[in-house]
Image 1 (tube, rainbow, N blue to C red):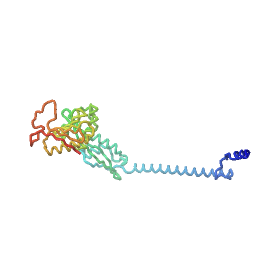
Image 2 (cartoon, rainbow, N blue to C red; image 1 turned 30 degrees about the vertical axis):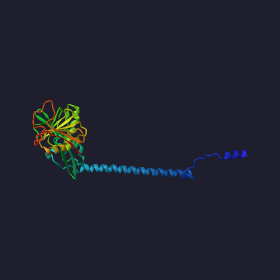
Image 3 (cartoon, one colour; image 1 turned 90 degrees about the horizontal axis):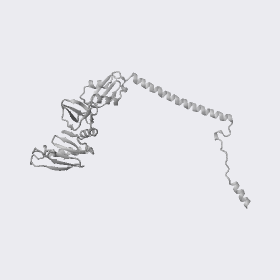
Image 4 (cartoon, one colour; image 1 turned 60 degrees about the vertical axis):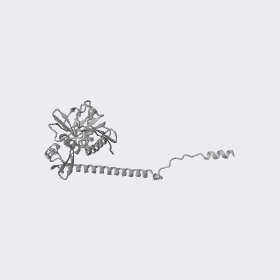
Length: 315
């Protein structure tokens, strides 16, 4: 019994067999294997040749396209559309586009930057190609949002802080005057640089928010303290903004509150506190200063001749 068990154990051992040759080469002679390998090489070369032919054809096609665009589609006419303070001739001259230049070589981004710099009242420019030989420059203009008094002239700025005019003798339209700032670098077509970095960072955000809120009749923007910004409306209502947090929402509340106050009394004077969301607190009377108020009409309703204080909640 012991002998049988030992024999069984020996037989149960796994036998490792050598790997079988590939089916395709089983029973084939050396010459047949060599012939198969040659066919594989020929097939591989054909594929490589086909790929090279395709690459060459694409290259030739690209060269052909470039030649076609170089020889044809040359600019013959340049036109300008969109409202602008500049004449078509001025814009075309500053664009640098010349007759005979290839229609597809004009870079829109570079053109927009160039015109915005050279002609400050242009906000941006886009181009439209009309085959076979016309290019149309579409202009979007920018306008003044505020100004800085500089001796006897004004520095006019758009909503990005770009200098539109660095020495305007007078304002063509009413603009709020920015207080408590000193210009360091003033170059037409470029963003103004102020001496104080905090005010420098704050100014474009304030101007952009004012434009977006469509607040009109503003007369003053005080940036003495960037955490306690004040904006004056119609020289009679001071909007207390605080810092830049939710600036657009604050101005939207302010606009609505001013409209409400004007319906009650179009001559009301006072302070509108917009610091607490979602409220707008209006306090009649001149803003508190170190000097006592001397005018009797400030803070009084023309109908009742009594001081008025209101609290409004806006959505």
